[in-house]
Image 1 (tube, rainbow, N blue to C red):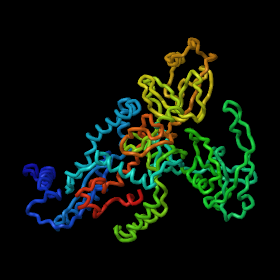
Image 2 (cartoon, protein in one colour):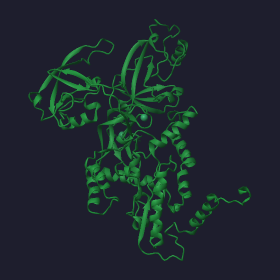
Image 3 (cartoon, rainbow, N blue to C red):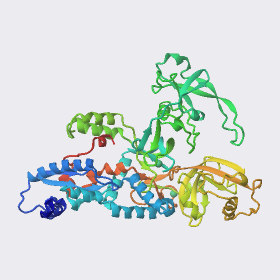
Image 4 (cartoon, helix red, strand yellow):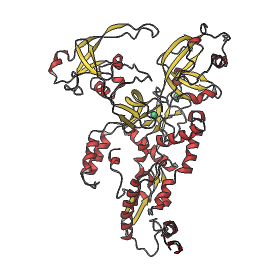
Length: 592
Ligand SMILES: [Zn+2]
Ligand SMILES: [Zn+2]
């Protein structure tokens, strides 16, 4: 009987770990310490492993890719090359931050409650505990990597490489700060790259609106208030007589206070000729809303005399067509004008094209060159700033002198601090603090004085306390009874008696709707430097503050082959192993 046979099955666990240990101890994986029996050639062969996310665990794609690289590495090693295969992991900014935020939420905590420093400590702890799983898995499948050179995209030396690269690009005029229409997630309060967005096809509803003498079709009639021009294709004969002329349309009068019924008034907008208008689509006329649409913003750039008008705050109307969603939280993405940092791509893209055209870099299979050339041929400037905490902070320092005079503070009791920003965009005050729509405010924890966020006021309403919706989903606190509301209001050092708040109470409540904004969005004076400047070059006496933004994760991973081999220092590793011999990745990395 089978059960009587002594351990008939092959158990890989008994064998593989022992063999891997033997390999590792032999020193063969480390090109600096070859066994004396090996006669190394002077030639080198090197691969840096495309760094997997610290949040990851090995899937079949990684396994396949690791095996391909291992075959190349082992072949060259056996041929006597000085062979390096360098492992490591990517800090994966928003992905890791969201994993840790989710963990915290299970304990009823938020990152805002912890504050930036404590939250980052929590992320590092998480990374120490779970971040090496994927590297251990590489060992389990026998990858012959040099573990003595393991790197992480946020280790100390890597930070230096990122700062050096940022300053290098900035000095060359390739990094600039600009106002662009970007993809904004109102939940995560961050900008997202086009690749961080998911699209959901929805059945299109098409509205036809009469604009003066012409009719146009649109999927977003609610942005009509922000329209500042109409556009037609220059070849479209139907509208030739209107091009360059102003036409009169009816629009809502924005000077009427919001409490009063809206009124219509005549406004004049210009008709421009632009290739972006497709004569075959709708009536051939499109409306241009530069503040709320990336394509429209490009039209605006070609016709700079068109005004920009922001009309939407954080409110997102449901509209039916191709909806963009945040890939992390599923919130609908609102295109928004915002101050961000960009890397100019034209010069860099040209160099990258030349590297392949000249044969210095070769694609296998060759047909993937086309994807690469197409991508680089149509590339736009890259928005490199992100409004999250986990990542490389920009080596940018802002003058706080002028700034602190223009910024208004809004205090919050310590226990509501964590609630703000988790899709809450409304707060109530008992006094008129003099805020106006469009004002930028700093949210302050009244207990500690710590600033925990910034927002722009998008709407202000004055009502009586009796009109407050106790279960208002936008407010950070749900009141179950009016008594609870009174208790909450009483905490504030107001001189008003609140004993009699009821449906008819004359106590005024100011409702502020706000949109979380990028930190330091409005500050104009800054200095780019790896170290904190000793003295502010602008006002000479303020305590300069570092940008709270972090760089897109790809800004650091793009430096991977350089940084892991020692850049910006001139190291032996750079001399020996850079440029690397092969990069083996999934095809989507070509244009990611
Ligand atoms: Zn989001
Ligand atoms: Zn200053």
